[in-house]
Length: 297
Length: 278
Image (cartoon, rainbow over all chains, first blue to last red; front, side, top):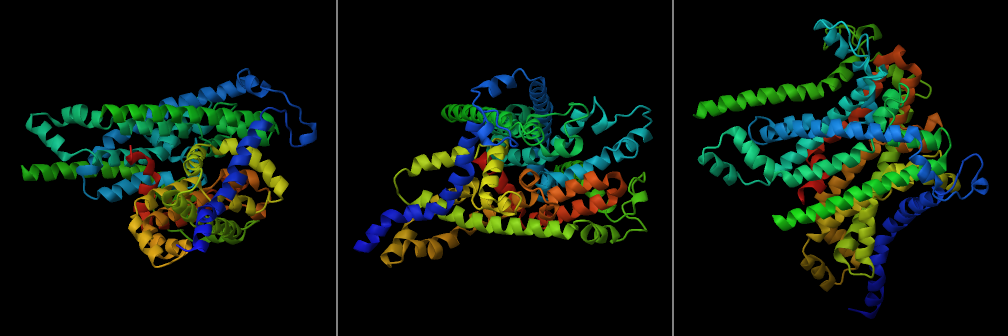
């Protein structure tokens, strides 16, 4: 190695990292820290930084006294409690069938996955039509089945959140199916065969072989779904705007409204940090548990 | 026994096909409605094809709105293509350094990258908004491009792939006296094409579909991307032009659909990458 080369050698890795790292510092690291600073102030975009005063943790303590915030949090939890078991339950039934027992498995998988990669705005536009209370296909079907009283879906105080949940399940199902399918590919066929030789039927094999062996996949999906559910935004913003009333208000949307409609940027930043810490805690928990799995396996 | 198995497979296939069609049906509705006149889109039972089907909705949406949708398409293309090009360059350079070079602070830095993959957009939107105002790029396409010229996830995916490439290849290049960059460009990067394809395709999908960033960082209608332009159109035209809204939705969906058909494997495997390593 020549002298020149060695001198450059020390610098080269940094040159390779630099384009990446500069962007990282400017657009992620500085904003994350900046947001923490702003979250301790009553910053308002119209008054500017000069007028902002340091108010300590008040934005954080206000959060838990703010009925709007607590209501959003409750909606998020309900959204998670309904959508996640539905998606995972359906996916758990669909994935083993798609994996082995069907023709055109790849095509079917692609069909289930399609909503997951489609623009949320296009999705909202379609579902707005489907949910149309008097003419939409959903209520037309209900009418033709003889129902007299049908839900008003996204405009209905009682049905608005369930409507958002339906769209959420529809979007996320394919992702859950695909992840379960890749989890299943890790299970050796010998296990199934020996279970069959032992006289187990399909239901028993599902219950005693498939489900236990998919445990770590299930755990991964659960965590991912929880994190995603806390970030639901597009469907709410386009379909209901959090309404009617605040029936579909969720954290991500509530933050957006606070920051960019009410200009309470300090408060919005505090909520952003709350979400960040929540996701961080969930992920740490996941790492911990995963290590445990690996040790017991 | 054999025929029984075939029949079983056939029945299961049909059940799954029905379910899959149910999932895809909203897209069928979107596609067919986009060609229909307004008074036919809520016909029940819905007809797959109308005798009055035409491209007039597309013409009106693309050229006769203010601003016309072709502008949104144009803005979305610019943002998507530049971001994706930037991201693959920064991600492969950075990923290579993380995978194959030794330098001080490498592992700590990589951990920091991993940690930031968790940061939700909601925690970044306010400070980025303020930052872009200060930098003077608020309400320019730059606000959508610059922050996306690099992605922690892209860097991560490239690093994973580079790690598996044998060191002998790099050593062979060193013996021949090639520079580090030449080794990277001529010897290593060509081997990482599958990973690069994944990064490119995933980022194309994400940038094309991005909704939150343009919603917050763009205020002039002329600079709207398709997602925000379409939202704006839904709010403005609403019920009076739902067939045209559907044409807009199709326009926003078609490029993704094409990419999906061509690179299904990369998309599905890339998006579920974290799941398999357990």
